[in-house]
Length: 55
Image (cartoon, rainbow, N blue to C red):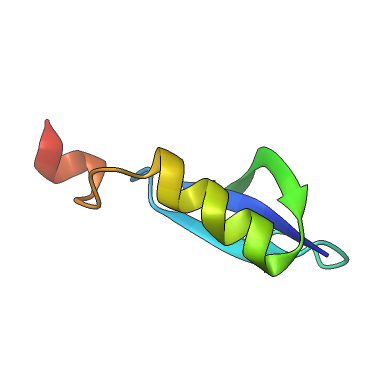
């Protein structure tokens, strides 16, 4: 099982659910299989530029 994590630049990744989230990242709220988490990221992360470049 995995969870979706996001950093302050609004970049997404997946992380093993049993492990603590690394510093600088927080849980986005979605969890599931690797495929489910990856599919969720593909749906919501439409602009891959870091937030600092978008603003």
